Amino acid sequence: MRNKTIMKRRALRSINALFKRADSVFEESPELADRYAQIARRISLRCRIRTPKRWKRRYCKKCHKFLKPGINARVRLRNKKIVITCLECKNIVRVPYKN
Image 1 (tube, helix red, strand yellow):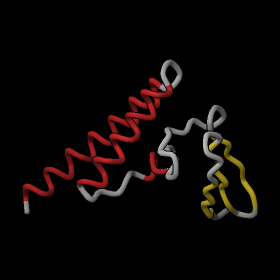
Image 2 (cartoon, one colour; image 1 turned 120 degrees about the vertical axis):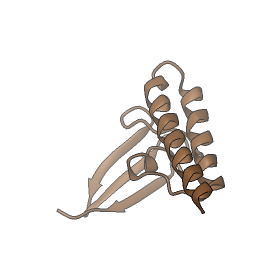
Image 3 (tube, helix red, strand yellow; image 1 turned 180 degrees about the horizontal axis):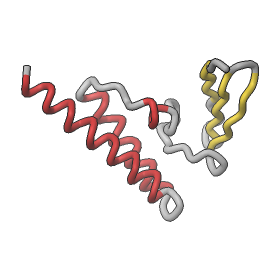
Image 4 (cartoon, one colour; image 1 turned 60 degrees about the horizontal axis):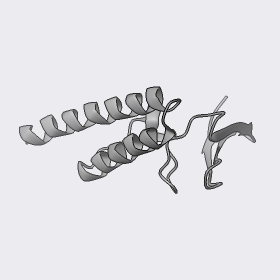
């Protein structure tokens, strides 16, 4: 029991670190940022951990690319929804929000 909680904490730390690294390195090397996002996703799947809300919408669930709003992602507000469009594969994600 205790081992699982320790492993999940370590996995969460590494997921956060990988997404932060992907965010910082995206300007120089988008391919490396995509790779970091893929590794973080794989860790979360393997350890059965939810990706933190902060990073959940920062990668495309279809093509698994790291998304940077304004560069390879479009973010719009429409009809009480946040509409995030991946400009790589044209996938659209709609997230409801409250005023």
